[in-house]
Image 1: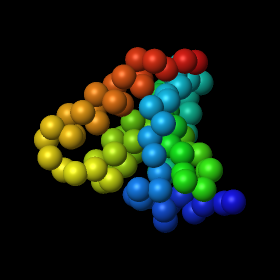
Image 2: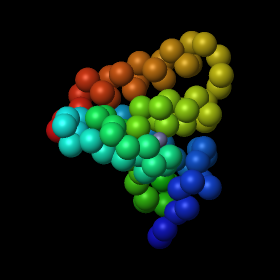
Image 3: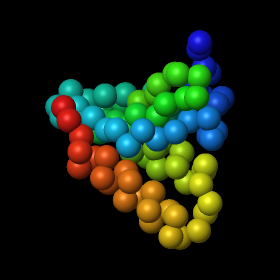
Image 4: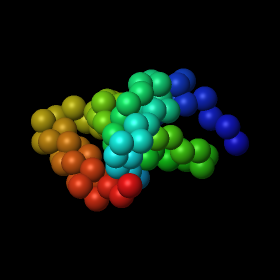
Length: 90
Ligand SMILES: [Zn+2]
């Protein structure tokens, strides 16, 4: 099943998998906004099974948009992204 990612984000149908990849010198492209030269990408998964690899800016905006905007939650989300980044493999 295909999902129109641009139209479907932000949506609670997408979940942050906590998985990141360090592309190192092989700069990657964000599936959501098309931004290039990303070193790190983060995996989002849709309820219908689609996957999307996005940059740190987009994963941050995604998490903020689907979560309550209180400061404690936002701090926790930033920590989730940082933790995924630390665990990133090449
Ligand atoms: Zn992006």
